Length: 107
Image 1: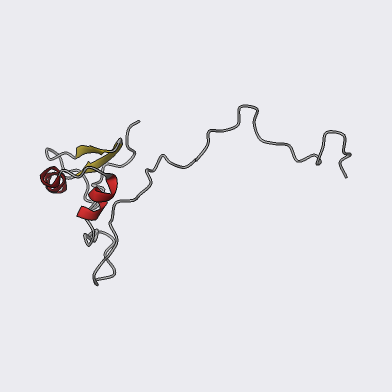
Image 2 (image 1 turned 135 degrees about the vertical axis):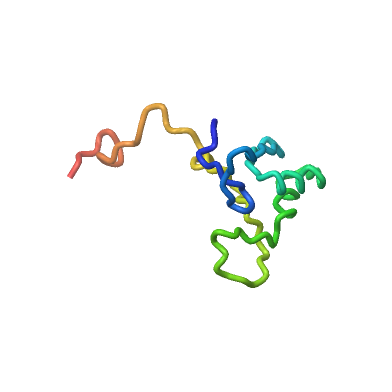
């Protein structure tokens, strides 16, 4: 389960050689953070993921900051990038659209 991105989840900064990103785990969710943001998390020691998100409300990512006003949202997403499906795929495959019942004739 490796992350596809090597960017900080808060500021969007890329990993510099020698600096590295740190993995922070809160409520079984893993985030990659730069050292300064990881230090903020370690100082606050949030118990829930919502508390972690609240730490960074107002932190506008430097790469995408077009809006210069006060930001009220956290740059950390509520959903993990792997959370695309709510249910696993059906073992028998997709349903067929040949009719309402097995005895119906297709038009």
